[in-house]
Length: 212
Image 1 (cartoon, rainbow, N blue to C red):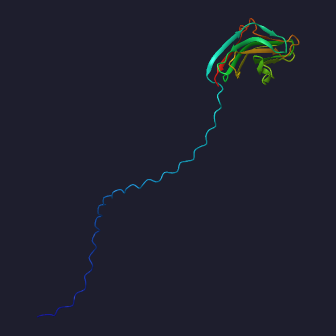
Image 2 (image 1 turned 180 degrees about the horizontal axis):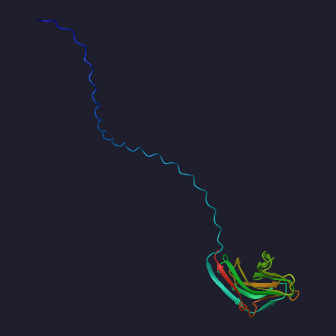
């Protein structure tokens, strides 16, 4: 017996979702990009200020020297300057050159009182070019001594000095040293080149000709 076709049956339930697939491998890293162009150079900084100029030197080239020593004891018992006996003569090779005078004077001064001193000056011919009365450390003296209550004072020195002179000549030029005592009263006196001392009673002068 033939039956007519039946009605479609109900839809079946959905199947379960399949598992997630594994992640694919990472792709290769792309090539590095080209380096960018260099930036423009910055402007140069301002130049610093110039440093101060150094002081000018005092000595030029040495041309010649003349040295002299004097060892005769010379006593000066006066406030008036008198020759110590120390001197030297130099003949400059150029009128524009200078002369450096270096002195080493053996000197002693004394007085039967509480104070005494002595002065020294340097002459070129008859012209005074330096005097100790321009000094301040000894009250205007090359050397001095004060002893309150003393009946006798005395002082011995090796007086040293270095000065520069510009004689402005090519003629023979004599430099000499004079001295005095601050007080001549109370048997005051100053002695140069004192005999029988450890310094052998000798004073020295050195003249050096220098270019400008």
